[in-house]
Every structure is written in C-alpha cells, then in structure tokens.
Image (cartoon, rainbow over all chains, first blue to last red; front, side, top):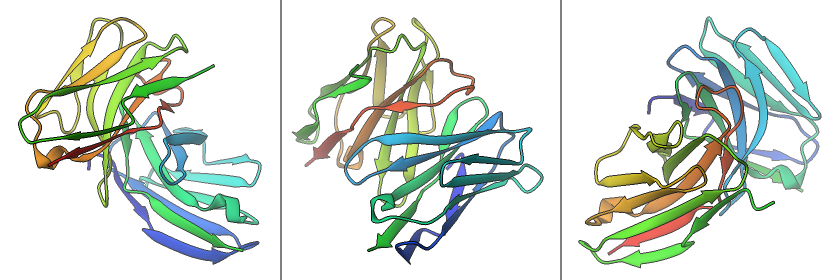
Length: 108
Length: 114
C-alpha cells in the first residue's frame, strides 16, 4: 500500500472503555484524516488533523499526529456499542491513500 | 441531498465480460475517485479525476478504464473482467484533489467475477 498500516488490525473492548488505534504512513502529508466504515457501507469522515497540528478533539474523539514518526493515533473515549465499525486513516499528500483499517468491536 | 450515488449495487459477471460502474455526485465537487476494497488490503486507489476533463492512474489501474463524463459523473469500466477483479468498488468525491478537505463516499458496488 502507498499509505501504511493501522494497528491493531482488530480490537475488542467493553462498552464504556476507551479504544485507541494507531496509524503509520509513508510519505509527507498535508493532513491526515480518520474515517469510519460500518459493515456493508461506505466510509464516513470523522476528523482531519493538519500537518502542523499535534492534537485535535471532536466530541469523544481525540487524534494525535507525530510527523517525525509518521504516525497518528485515534482515541475514542467512553465507547458505545454503536462505535463498532472499521476505522481507517488516510494520509493526504497528493492523493488520499488509505491503510488496511482497524476493526473495532464494542461489547455491550 | 443524495451525495455520491453508485450503480449498480451488486453485479455478477463471467470472466471476459465487460461492464461499467456509474458514479454521480451532486455536491459540485471538482475531484472524483474510484477505489477497490479487498479483505486485508484496505482501500486501494484505482483512478482519479482531479477536475473535469482530466483522469490519472492510482495504485492499481491495470484492467480498468475511466471516463469523467462531466463534473458530476465519473464511470469505471472493466473491459474484460477477471476473477481478480472481484471486489467492492467505492466511488468518492472531494472539493479539491490536494486534500484540504474530506472525501465523501458512495455506498459501494459489489462485483463478483466468476
């Protein structure tokens, strides 16, 4: 892949716990974005962090970016069963390239 | 507001048959994209169109052709389908290609090549 990888590939947690997933990318970026995909559906944009930002919050989402390590993390706090989905990061240099995703299962 | 609409949603082809996947967006976006999604491979960019009248290859263009018919529509054609092209195909659009914004995705087209 042009992009890189998300880690872990799969994550299972109890409702109310926090979920953390990581993303590594290969090339220089303008920004990094996180998307969510429910089973059988298209991807939906969650949050964008620009290359000159280190941390960003949106509701229960917290994203960090470390351009020196070419990595990002997505934290979902106080998880809910409805957060069960696959999560993808997309690095945005010239194009939108995606990783392989983290499959999150939140157990009620 | 429909967003990005893909047709058909499901298709079964025999090896060697041809077909076209249609995509239309109603957000007046300049850039459009075709991705394929395979288990364990994530989303891979097939072709993109930065603006009306232009198209460029992505990561995995072999076996595909595209047409940016107008600003709204971007089609993906398989001239001679192969089993390796069994996949879920997603069309997406964005306001601009140089990633200042987000991608909007269609619901996907599930293609099986026998």
